[in-house]
Length: 325
Image (cartoon, rainbow, N blue to C red; front, side, top):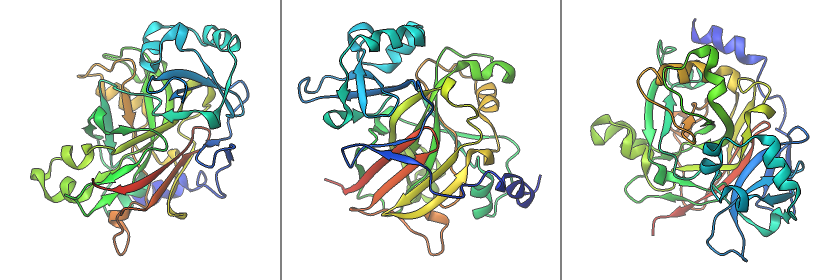
């Protein structure tokens, strides 16, 4: 299908207004509207627990978090591996006194996944802005887990690059071991979704390191995630979500996951033909048009910039760019 035709097909799903969001008492906390009885998992810490990481479940309105660490430990991946049901965790959460969200520090909702798998050129608009044809098969690359920072963590403007760019993405969190999975069964292996920023040093991605993506994509702090992992049961259609990114309050990306060229089930099927996905593995599904590298003139991030990334139903993250120490 031609790019122009695919873009026309997807146009009806475009964002027509600002995505609804909810600010809590703290100006740094943002949560998109979500269905009632939401099951959204967060990792966090408090002044009382110091550096200890806790696992919690957010209240329906996103203003409180219930600590379920005593039962499941402070790690989402450990919880996923336990195979515990949502009904069970809801029952556990109902028995603890919740903490106001303004009194906690939200961390990345997934830490230390074995794999962060990324898909390049997976939105029709992102292909069009580069004057590239729709790919016949997905382009996969990876990021190290050491890139992960929380939903309000800082992004380092590494001094070895002057072409640091933004890419808002829908991230998929795998819920159970997947090997040789069919498209028909692929979505059963998804635990949930979160918001990601695939920060990229374009000079290292494109011109340096022999054209290999690894360093350009895997510098420290180059994968903000959060604010929560939203269980798949709360997302009616992950392929019909508004997605956007702003820098310093100026909108840069505004699209829909309807533009995905290779959908989530297709991605999982193709990957698991040769690579086993494990509980907690993260897949970044691609970015819509509007990245800095392809703007005219090109735009890149600098210290002091603030990146807002939001996906309908899933949530919003906010990350400041800081100078390299």
